[in-house]
Length: 341
Image (cartoon, rainbow, N blue to C red; front, side, top):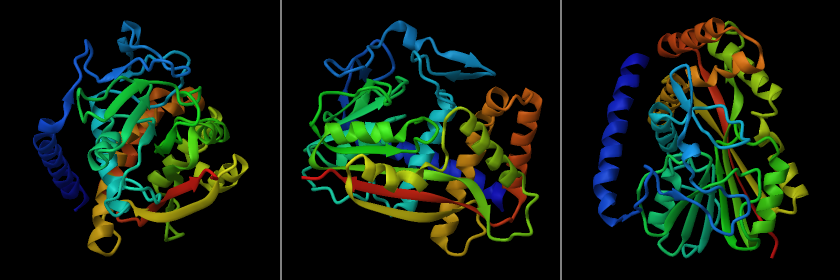
């Protein structure tokens, strides 16, 4: 059942991408650039980085490509396989978020929006399409965004843990799935506080590790074991995969108010009852299957594992994910907070 769902989801996802392209490309602006991205230098914007040839000289490891942004340590690749996974993950967040790009109480005519760690740019593009009044900027360390983008959307190179731009200009700051990128959450929140206009919002959406199991007897799960090792490896390099548990405290310390947090259950696979839960579970399953090999690479760099041991555990995870009916799940957090007037 899980294997058939895996194939079915891939077909549906490809059809969704084709439909999205055919319906929207005629309304999008074309950014003529020597690279395959709409990304460019962000003038007068703190520590943004211009698109030099060296930033396209991606690092190659074990057949996967990785970013070339100076002095930034990011775990995951930036190749086609990873970009497809990120677009699929966008659909996952939309599904568990009731098809909404955000939950913050924004006005429809919101003006200035910043998407931190924009990845493929799919969230920023969708937001720009839905809010024609908004100027939407996406920041990332890899120039992998498309050339076809709405005229009110643009992308720039920036390390989000360094300074972003001039202060006091933003209505909305958005972050999603950034726990494997951010080492200093409090610092990012303080930057958001400086750059937001009074009354502006920050929103965060994030997976929380480890995977959990409703049935305590199943402690032999390879997926549970893998997720605990993944948490430990990330912790060794300064990444907290349980960051959502401290968001409220850190946001309030940074001066935000009206902190609102929603915790939702994301099942892994099709074990959960109800159509919507099963769809969410299939998205989560595909997300894990496509990402576990690259995610397990950190076991070699942070925990000193051999490449063979890391690959073997990743293979066991994929085998269990496709065949097991163990009721595994993880929590996904949605949070927004407001800068005081």
